[in-house]
Length: 291
Image (tube, rainbow, N blue to C red; front, side, top):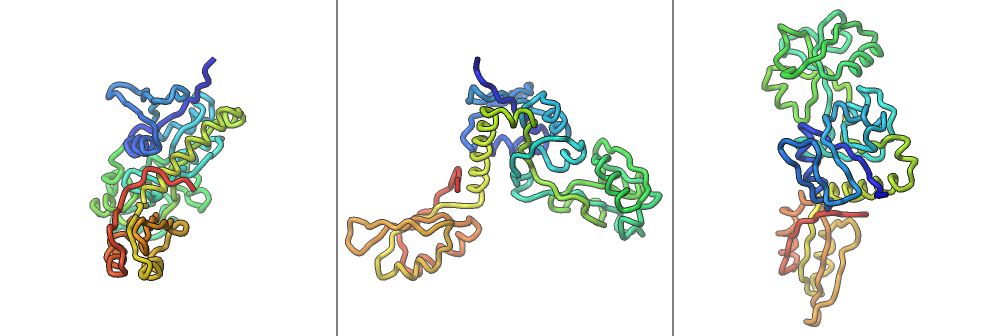
């Protein structure tokens, strides 16, 4: 009997970034526009697209073995699952997202305590209620089916909304009162599935490749030729993950140098490397960086 790992991939805002990450990790995935069952080139994986909001419940109940969803939705469902790994990526980029209390710019609400007796709209109803209770606040919390930013001031006094950059909130004349939760994507497992030796190993392998792909997102490789007299100057400019790889070239007194660095520093460092004596500088992208 073939062993199968059933995995849930988030449908919706995280879908494209998740599929891109899996592809970069080495998995070939095809998704039909009408199907909720992506096809993996790994016969040991069966995948299903599931909304991130529901993922933790299906994993907890063992309907799927594992899945990717936000920490926020795990907490919203109070799901009893095993968190295998944190994978920091989101719809807009490689950073955590925030759930914030936001109110109209001209609102008198300044702190969470000012929400007493007010009406709040959010998708994150359960967590918001628990947060308010912890802060001694009694307020009406309504589930929002979408377009939450347009609800204040007529349909709600405040909202609890997800934001990555705050741009949408500002565009709707809202200001942030408080951040109530920071969230990032988690790879979660059903607790019984995690006790299965084969499934656990399979999940750990997938996570290793996903983490490697994420690590590579912010890094590039650089290789260059350096004359022996310039080696020290060039080396002083490089802060690598590890020491740069140096090998002798066939031409005496010349070396090939290869290093992995943060992509953000490349545009600043290449001119300096050139001035320090490096030649034939080549920058190349990375698929995976496995520590």
